[in-house]
Length: 462
Image 1: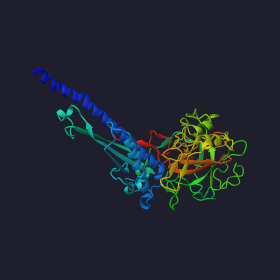
Image 2: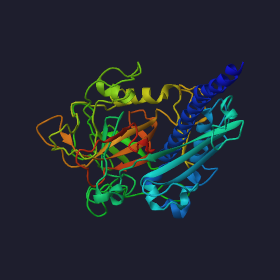
Image 3: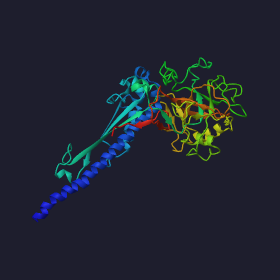
Image 4: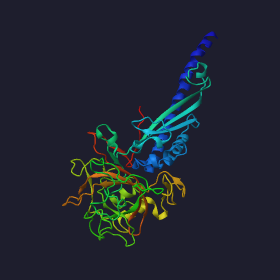
């Protein structure tokens, strides 16, 4: 009996190590997963809100407060809700704190409106999750759990997510170089670097660009930064039509890719309101994936209705680059009500069954599910939609002659919400975000990828 009594000490100690410590390790991993999910959710809300297209306006006019301005803001509520959905030890987290800052500054402020203009370039979200009470069964005998009570213990985790927009981020980087972005699932509608609402009716020589391509202001800067809401005007929230720069029959061209009103050979109804922006069809490489059955006629349609992960649209690669540049396909004519763009875009947004809609009367803009939404939550507010697409912006220079697949230089990306496809195949869109390419690419840098031109990524140190 004496030997058994002595052995029980070792048996209970081993049980504490194998069962209780293992339970706490599992709970710690669950806490980290909750923190990661919460940080990414908050970053996603910030990305869709267009804050990175409003680097100088938000701190002073209050337009950021609804997105990340404290406990009742959209990003904080999203982080808290998503983190709570990830149980820790079978229960919801007892503490969830959300902080905002920049990658170069501490993220300890629960209100982003005090984070300064740098926050509008590359916002950073920190989420701290704690589960203060986790039952232990054997370790309590030896008080092996520091910081806990004899009967309980806790775990915690921290995650940091960045909303990476390369626009003018060279101003905040050592040496002025920034990591480029290469979004995936980009739609093959290559638009010129001309903002049709910044100066409606302007000529190519006087139109303001979406992003700067010169040294002053710094290359990649968003030129009409700001959010269209509550009497203020900015590129975020602008609505216009995307019109193919193509004739009714035959090939496309680039004689006047940013004419307003559109050139005579564009397929445009007489009642189409101005302004509009003409696009050129991109050359799709490889085979797009996740293609609905209604958009599989050719690779161009597949790239619109599905996800094109094969065609590179990368900032920092010029048309003259020896590597694989972005190409225009002038042999593709997507014009008309029955054209490739109209057919596949209607399929993408489920327009036949009532597509999702964007409410720009509130901020952050609210996405409402339509009857055609596959989630079957018609009328409900949602955080993602197939109507949100990314488009490459090229420098707008004349294309090389002698080829039907000329190369273009990508200088940025647009993220837009497709409101509808009209009777003649033109797209009515609203800008949700803009990203410029920045002013330099570090040698050997691997581009940041994602479905958005403003990728969301975890940057939590190991």
